Image (cartoon, rainbow over all chains, first blue to last red; front, side):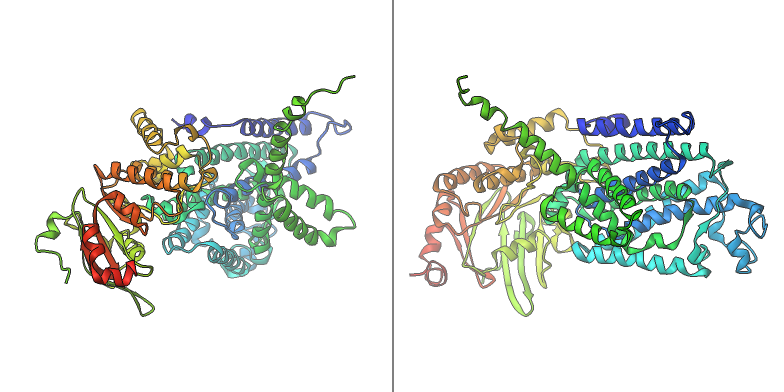
Length: 379
Length: 254
């Protein structure tokens, strides 16, 4: 039943996406590990980590598209779920440092020693266990989304009001995580990671494995998201997006369906954050910044809202462009470029890159027979 | 004045007694009483602002009345339930403006309406079985959209959307159908066909039709209730009602 759920209704574009991500996940780590540094086919560890970051963003974009593109919930706080997943992973990595920290305390992370804390706070318990930490990666964002969604959707908060509340949510978390006495490292966040599952996080092999893992999770999340949106539940969710009260009069409990996709989406965002942290080596409160969540919305809009492949594509394209842009003399103008891009896409490409390309392709195919029908000029 | 007779509560499908609701001090419905028998088809007419749509809102749980009784099937208090619960009890509603799901195919529109468990898990792992597919095909044939099943509902004409919505109501298989202005904006031919369709439906469902088009109501040939300023002004066969002086004065004019 599970395979049928995941693979039925898969279209050509979906298979192409899976094939490309699988190929990248296999070839890039191999090109990094096996091909010598001088070869033009070698992929440097830095490049691989950079692209690993893009793919985490792609996963975040898919999770946002699930709620925004399909259910019409414009979440401006999805960065919060991403950051919470990241913090859960960061806490595991902190506990792995052990006595190798600057203060050499076998239990307490450096920042707690610095703050003169006597013992580990209760909410850090268990994070030395990898399975527990991974559970929290899913559970913490999922639970927050569930509780938040429970109240918001039951009270029928929709549209711009919901967007503002999600924005407030991530801002509140930003302020909270800045505080030292929250016990998450305050302003500096969590960093100086050493090991993950006993392997050195900085090591080339670990980086390659993390990259492959990111591709694997991207594939898994894509399959789950695709299974959801093509199921009857997906049809209900699209119906909610287009005519919410009509769906209610058909007897569907709209709030529960919204709650389901919102929670699933938050869990996915958490996974993206957890994969992101060991590859960039730090998690700090700035990940909660409202601007991050808004940027995610732009990726999805640019790639093609309402298309999972489009969302992933948008995340990679915009972030790649950001890297190109910000590494040159144009760096100070990146935010202007991003804003201009958003306006351009909204005005001229409302279906995003993928939707526009598809429309162009279909348009090219359809009128093709017309000139053929005209009598060919005699030569 | 129009108080239902004792015993009407238990025998009726829908029972409204002394229902009132006001919005910002404006009394949209005042002391409305109405009973619908099982299997009955009833036409409701009245000038703009008479409270026809508000009455439907109350029955379907969109609006809560300030006072009064709204009972379904003699025992269920509708004022305590929300829209989804009322829909699942077996009350279907067709809106004045046709609202179908534009980005779904016609077939999927029917599928979404098809009577089934509406829980999250049941819909997530839904597989359309043979009898359900057969029912969908039947409905598509009834509403004459079988050849367009793969088309997006948004591409349909106004009249076709109205039929699709009636088809969705059929798929829901409700005990009571509330139909708001089914003939609005239709050509004469479409209107006549819609009347045939509704009469067909009324054979095994109770139906309340709100309509302005007197010709259409004549074609239906059922008991008529006239609403005025939120309460019942007259009730009876169309000929009797249209002879009523008060009705002529407030509604029919001339």
